[in-house]
Image 1 (cartoon, rainbow, N blue to C red):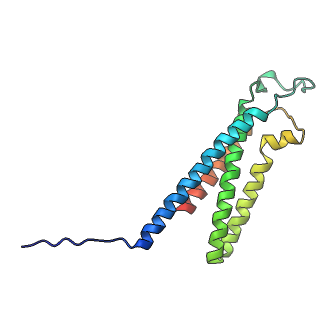
Image 2 (image 1 turned 45 degrees about the horizontal axis):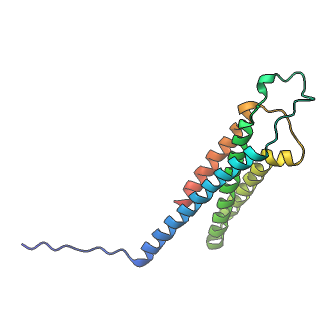
Length: 160
């Protein structure tokens, strides 16, 4: 008895979509890596040291971050959040053009709101406007970490 092997060919359209999806994912990962490097460099170069004179007496010295490590971390996280928010806005606008769904408009509004939150919580913007408030230690980073998890989850689900 002769066994016949059936060759299964994937259509070219599916192969092109798969290649486009891989290219898009690689581009998005590259953009996020660039954002991490950019945020770290900007945070370490431009974050001024906390003011020593005029510090309120009720703030203990231990709360100060002498090397601005927390500011660098917060700047990096907020730059990542800004980048992912912008990527998601672009993805959702593309989806809206195809689907015309009210739900997609809601996602765009939520992403725009998270973008504004990330921009306004970036320490470099605060320093730009002259605010050099005392730090709250690790507690100033935790909300941004939650936002990063939320945005990364939405990005993962949107790229599936």
